[in-house]
Length: 302
Image (cartoon, rainbow, N blue to C red; front, side, top):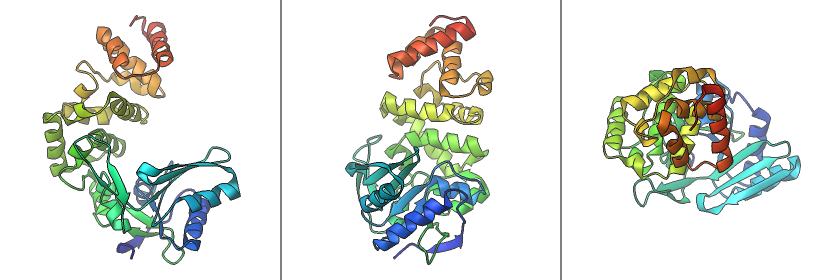
């Protein structure tokens, strides 16, 4: 049975595709939902850049049907019980079945297995505001599953984790918490902030690979204005996991895109800039491009 459904939200983007996906799932006898960040955005009256779908069973038949009608390709990721569809024209769709996760050790990638309900799936997510699902079943279209108080957290303008081991399980959530708080002008909920401080004190983010840290840094740099997020991270003393010499130059807000902003950071880091870039394990061509930008725009050699 689906989780308790409260109020209704109308999707603010991709409505035909959402209804089509729901109908395909229903024809296969599956429950289907839009889930995660798109639901958060719709609840705030915002369109969402992406829609992620959650199904009660195998995602491949739905992917096959979408590709058959619209053209394109799909790839199944057995380890994570997900299927990624690229429709003709480049539109990407992510389909996942109900999942539960266990973390064998702090900062490890999770071990994933099928879950029995949408509520069990939502329990594994990062923050309450992202642990909501909108039904796309024809008889309950738009109804919201919100078992952990995501709507309440939106009203309170707070980022709150679902459990006390959240940051230890996945320290990238520390950077995501700051990113969402910065994006929406929210604050970390009090207990969540204490757990974040504990995560930093115990140096949990240092257990992450440099590639995973780099990905979180790039997501921050792709925000319209990441300044508030970096203020939060500085307050937590978490920027040091990027580099002990890491700085966020306020002027970088005027730059568009992650690479120009990363170039500004490297330039303002001085001699520490080049080792910082090397530590991010970027492709050689990307590092060379950044160094050219730093030399041309800032008159510095890294």
